[in-house]
Image (cartoon, rainbow over all chains, first blue to last red):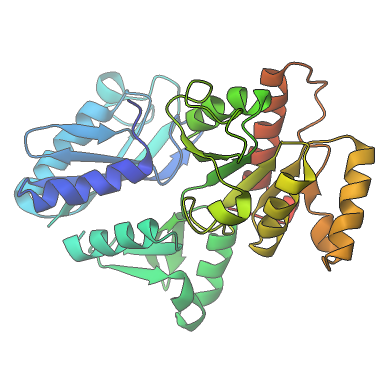
Length: 107
Length: 233
């Protein structure tokens, strides 16, 4: 089933209350052709289970890894993806857009 | 994000009240500003503008990068009339992530066989709204589709009073002219009555019930997403 932004924040709270390590990723800026609008959320737990999306699937893997790191070190971070990035060939946005994502632990 | 911040955001959404999460990206400090608290907030003008547009985004506050998450209540579509168009309309509306309720006191029309998987309320609108169906608010769209003033009119009046962001009514121009007369006699001012989309739906030459449903939903989305429509969600 398609998850909505509402489901995602509710899931983040429920997962947290269930004692799981949780991080929330939010698209904070987009340029050019970006598939998910500013404000889109993805929630991830310390096992890598996730709900929601911040792109068309291009950078989810990297955002999930950042989320797991944020859960581990307890610090929020801003990560950027795009064709101009040196990681373009690994996790760049094939659509040619660029995005910035805020990744924060929930505790 | 602290769990109490997340809990507050979720609680405000559940209560159908707007709120804005303010996140300082340098350091991660966060606070939630509820709709009622905006006028007294140091960022009042900025937050009010963002709430009106429904769009969050990055802003600069005293040289710091701040992200605003605007959380407006989920939009509901209340369909009056368990008619053929409604059968096409409700699954499309659900696909658009609208919370949908269908109200029709006529149990011959409002049957679970015709409306599987939907909140179907076989009451008069006056009885249903505020009871089995939560009271209308600014984040509701109302589509009156019965053709029967006894059923449509009370729902339209409730929708105008609640300042629903979208109010549409099925019926020809002649039918609508008669409706306008009834609403005027009921004391509704012209500018309120003018907010009713009638004949309902964008003019796309829709013929079939499904095409009419598309035209209605397109009009609902336009009312929701384009501030110039005079109402917002």
